[in-house]
Amino acid sequence: MTVEATAGLENGTLATAAAGPRPWRVAWPDWRPLLLGLALPLLAAAGWEIVVQAGLASGRLVPPPSRVAAALWKLARSGELWPHVGATAARVGAGFVLGGAAGILSGLAASYSPLFRRLVDPALQGLRAIPSLAWVPLFLLWLGIFETSKVALIAVGVFFPVYLGVMAAVLGVDRKIVEVGRIYRLSGLALARRILLPAILPALVVALRTGLGLGWMFVVAAEYMGASEGIGYLLVDGQQLGKPDQIIAAILVFALLGKMADALLMALFKPALRWQDAYQGGR
Image (cartoon, rainbow, N blue to C red; front, side, top):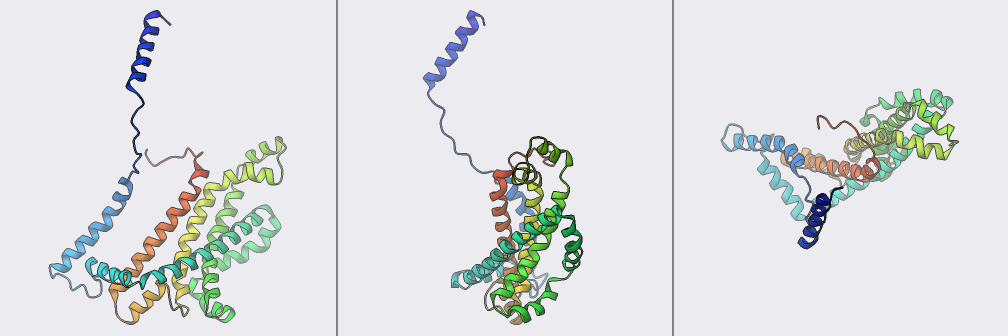
């Protein structure tokens, strides 16, 4: 390094030191993806509101957003909404934990043991095709009308996509990666922790997200089974009393709860997926 360059470097260092530390800046979250995602539904809602207010449609069967918002605000202000939200969220949470755990364990067993896969997988694939409402009368006879039958139905909905996703992910692991682990004398739990788990983790997250989404779908069928509280109960109540605004408000609550639960699940797994350097869709 020349004398001039050294002097310039020293002068720059001294200037930086004299200027003091850089001011601390708040790292604000990027809200642009959220706003872009809300643009289409908000435009559709505003368009329908204009059509109804202009008298081009009655809005009796499909109420405008103002009536739906008023119905939702009435439920929230009276305190009637929150017990229903809590009951539905608790059912989905319990069903997701039970069904997800059973799906992961069964998927691992089916991928590890060819005998287990040949014995169990054909029956499970047949059961997977059964609609959710077909389970309702059977669960009512077996488990009664209380919470056990509702949680069991949600767990069934969560189980199948998690089981299928885990089994396919493990069976799809590159054999060469496993052989490298065995060369380094990894076996048993060490091989599963250091080789198999990182390899299947992205597919596991997708399977859990799919199972969680089906859990929110199955909870509607579950709350048709004589529930006295829950968002599904609000749907039935709105149907019986002819309140389309309450029905659409309940559907919106389902959508918000489902989106929040999915975002929470992704936030929990995000630290474990930092190593991914995947294609970002044109970025």
